[in-house]
Length: 236
Image 1: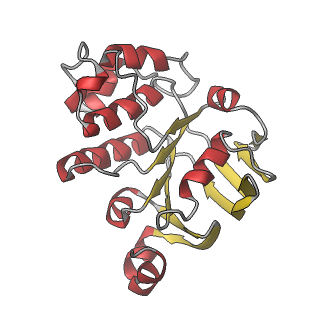
Image 2: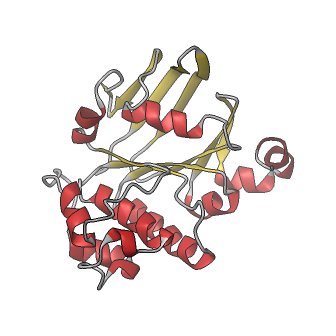
């Protein structure tokens, strides 16, 4: 089964700049939670604070009740948290199979281990590309590879930073299907997004962040029904 995530009262800084102020959110196993907001609202910093790339100055992050805030990112990953950054950080000189092997970690109890064969079912575009170098792939294919490499670590909870950004509509629809499939696997997923339409297709609940503060939380159905809230916090 997936892990539950609890984030309470995070305050994070870049130098003296106070980026996150009292950010709290929850995600349960088998749930997709969207962190929505305009560019610069603090979405990426929130995910980086959860995974430990940015060390929070205050607050707590817990996985299944065990505190992880303050630990280095590699230890947090070993606990079962996967992170897919906004930048597609593939190893351009390695093949698809080589990139996947870099991410391989031992199986996790209660979860079906990920293999290249299973990942090629999840991302059919990658099937048949095992010997292609990542640098020869399109942006959408690289995004799929980045997620697939993270899944090779057999995480129980995945953070996705802007997974639909810059992708062609046909690739976005494939990403929607993949996230829904991961939810059925029992994973908890937290994704940051500016693309509200994408989030509404995959998420169960949403947190809206503005200027480093959570301004609202609601179900996706409530978000879809509240045009005024979307216009206030999410339109450019």
